[in-house]
Image (cartoon, rainbow, N blue to C red; front, side, top):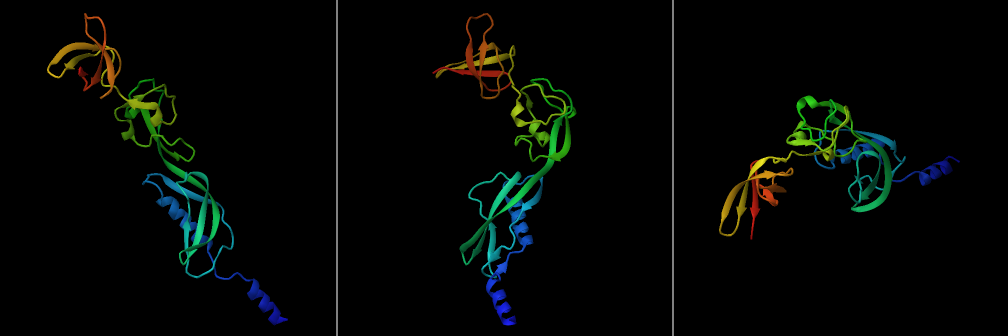
Length: 229
């Protein structure tokens, strides 16, 4: 009877090596932390489901994440893993995780009007969970340099790149030098801007006392250039 039980135990016992759960966790965390550009965010990985008794056929094997393409590594994420022995994939399984991210976020310290440049006194920095926040949240003051709001921003709301724009260097009613270039002649005259413009953009200008408007390219704060072929 003892011999029969021993035979059944050996026959039905898993052959090879059981992959430790801690090794699976280590590979997953290493993959998540090593994927994508360096980020100041803190990443916390919570494991929701790990298959039990994953067995490799050999003592020598490699365990790796086998994503076919880039994954959005935030929130609830299922990661495919595979066991490779002697260069051959022998088993695939899925590990369910919740990936939480934490970092510094800039919030409006007061209500900000539309087209308002943002100074240090207009923002406050809080360390918060960014897992479910939009991907274009502002995380550093350097992202605000030379920018202004495109709409009203309510007090306490997170700042986003999508509600910011580069401050125009030419504004309506600004007096500018309108440089008119042809193949043989360059003429500079005084003109008035009729709309906002940033470096390299086309803006409408008008010469005082003359009828009609012109479209020229903003070269700097005081110069708009019009090229005539």
